[in-house]
Length: 299
Image (cartoon, rainbow, N blue to C red):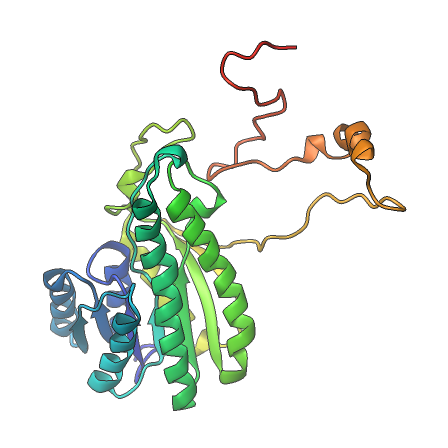
């Protein structure tokens, strides 16, 4: 018997890659799974896999970036399986473009799905869980891209927002028995093919099985994780890592406060060597020699 016997779960973007892995692992642990994907055939194929293995599954093709889509996702799960105990926000898209070239449509198309879809689906799910009185689990999806990644203002910004929403919802929803966590998954998918290095050039990445992440999701949805909320875990590729929350680093107190001239005089002594690395690869801080416009002469 699996750790999710008698539970139900809805997975957005469950038709391929990482989302498919979530669906399979949840079903293997006994959950009835609503597989959401705008690609009906892909979602149907995952449902067939689950049913062939003796599980329960149904297809949902809602556009989760709309309120109606989010509302119907939850309603269908309740109609099909009688309740909603877990929501996994996995659906995503990518429209990479360097910041100065990114259009409003490219920016908002990613924000609507990642940030907007996560917000609306989670709100509808939490309202249902509160009404049921059963508590439940919400598992969001972030990315190391929110550390900073070339060409991904829209994607990285959305993932950073989802991380912050995860912390906030964990505080607000605990009173209803609802736990909120997130994963930062590793896996080779259509979206990972867009990854670029710090110089903006494409990088050939080794294959990483995207379905591995589902084991952590199933665990986080189970009673064995009843004491875990407001956390982000790096998953997949053989790892299980806790991502540290943002926090204040180097700090120097000065009686009477810091004036601008104080900072001019003393910043290098107190802070320069402690400036944070930038970007997904966390290379050492690269700008100690200054940032100058093209053609500027060294002085």
